[in-house]
Image (tube, rainbow, N blue to C red; front, side):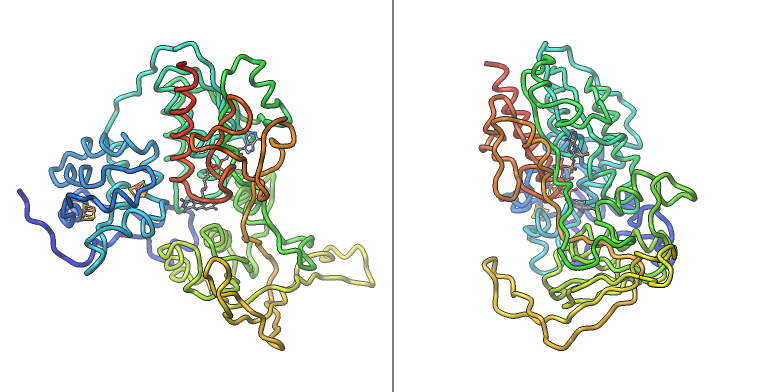
Length: 471
Ligand code: FAD
Ligand code: SF4
Ligand code: SF4
């Protein structure tokens, strides 16, 4: 048996040079080689009480899969992960591991935790490259289920049911399946080919995917039942952007992060003469401090911005984005304007010439400096304005990234479906809504959260739907 690697540091993830990658959309992190993956796996102590597993929302059997990597049995490792996670190539890349599985790793006490996410990504990529076995479509059990939305919750629910022989149809509003994994998270963090492969596997399992169908408009939930579906899972996400309500948000050059990223990711706005153009170049301010804000800022840079600011009202300590993403953004030259809050977006107005083409475009963003005051109800110190500290950022584009909410369309067209005051669909522990045979999960229930929690909710609902339809 090979010796344990007692290095306090984990193996470094190779990345593209920041100076080069800031201008291309290729993946930033390049992944471990076989040798490095085995070396990292040797850092795992195979703890009997498995604290790392407690930190994983879907309870991946972490020490077991890492032991397989130590033995060089990478396909064996994949088979262990895929018992609990249906999207390991995605989770290995975008899970907030540092607050989940890796946060509980004992190696993190006196050094860096084992690179669990990096190893998961390695295993999934190895499987996708070398395993040519096609999934086998199970025999139909005669039951039909509809899934609304093709994000991680919908895809997971559809996949788990299809494996049990259900005839599943996924109805997706956009023209491409994958949800935020394709329209939100940019290529340089999560290549579209990885999501396309997952979707392809589902179709081989027999899942039908109907794109360009907006449930609530094209068809209602009740009509899905009229079409012969016996249960419905709603995984429609939380795609409705929030705005600050400050003057100037209607000016040309102000985007929600969702719109900006969707245009860039899905509508190919980065091409010359695209159908859905987007501001390219100039100076850009992104308001917010989450993963979405980092993605919008780094996308703006890759679209040719000469300067990109992150404007966030608290300090670096409270910034909610993943640390790795913040470091990557800093390395690429994104400037962080912390403890700053926008108060107004200013626009160009030529009183002499109402036809001046520059009329109505952003010219700047007025901000005020903040300091941290008393803790709020969640224990986070409340930002308080410093009087007289106003200043103006000279920018041409403003991207608002201050959160999203579930879209009210499905609720407003479905009798008997209750939502909470934030618009999240109300469900019980099995994902069952207040309407018979209608289940829901992911961001549509919780509000904006994580890929792995959406996946977990899809799994829970699939189990409950199976129980309900097997009665
Ligand atoms: P979604 O992924 O939002 O999918 C919902 C799908 O439903 C969409 O395809 C939508 O078009 C479709 N839909 C909506 N309404 C209808 C309708 N009426 N009819 C038919 N279809 C409909 N999480 C992480 O864990 N790590 C990260 O690094 C991370 N980065 C992120 C970066 C960005 C830019 C964004 C926006 C989110 C990020 N998240 C991240 C959050 C994560 O992506 C989401 O929590 C997750 O995708 C939610 O999955 P879901 O299945 O609930 O919904
Ligand atoms: Fe960690 Fe996410 Fe994998 Fe779970 S699914 S082990 S949280 S990377
Ligand atoms: Fe390995 Fe860390 Fe989990 Fe222990 S806690 S089994 S060292 S990954």
